[in-house]
Image (cartoon, rainbow, N blue to C red; front, side, top):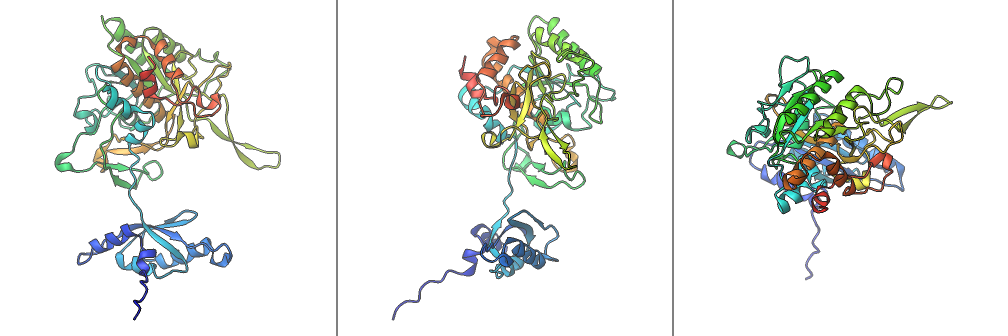
Length: 455
């Protein structure tokens, strides 16, 4: 008598292994929702059986079973109890497979890998030790656990030039920027994982909170930071406050026998006004030039003005890239001006659509470099809200990657401290070419490992 052929069970094909293991683990316990990705059947031969029809049928099944249903072109996302998953698996006409919706971790370690900072930590122990970087922004929440363990923020040298009554960061921008440059999340009590909001910008009142499997780190985790608050608590400020902040930093070095401040990050700016100033010669630009002349390395975000819409003769609006959209003070020639690229796949996706484009209004190449600036997780200034980290995008996020890279470089090549022109040339020559127009990428993406080994 011949054995009957083995017929795989339905769940082998429809319910993926990770989902089935979650279901099995709940056996005998109070059932808990399992986040799933529902892959839909798509019959190209019969449109009435295509992906859109499948989507509608699946959403109809999910009605009342999950309070958080969303969709993409080919998938439906939901959190379902085990019994609902098993019932959904019976809809073979519409459901191809049910995958586990794994928690993804877009933390800063992703972008530090992209610019090869982690390679330099291992190969050269270049972690920013002995280097001091100023952050001119909305302030820094120095008590954040990311900074607290190593006393990253030098509170004695920190100053407030804003209209706010406190050095603390009430807006969050400055703390996020600072966390990309330096600091590292320490091990939490009892191994408790850190938490991050991954949609705080889209839904500030109800961010999606995930736990982080690793401890986020700045590009130069052992560097020291100076909090120079020049933006008010609403995230806006004045050029005069920034000028006063730069002057303060210059004088710190002037009155010292050694370098007290190696560089400054300025993730701020405003549109260039060609009717008032020559390009790169506004008062703030000139103050930046003075800071560079004094030995400070000044890293500035290029702005998020690189994308807009135009109206055609027929009234239709179309999206366009906006050239010569670099903001002041990033127009300053001697500064290192930074645009944005994808945090994990810069070669594939190139320059971020929002990143301001060059050349400058007087024909110089800007940006100088590009760095990760899309959905990067860094410090959240208000951890009492339930999470310590959050996502943010923009050239404001890209610039501190370069600041951190330079700080890490200087901690290994201390002979270049106080020589901003030479440092800038090293990083431009060692940048990774992404195959884009220089008006978009400048010299290319910052590559710390190449810079480290080029001298």
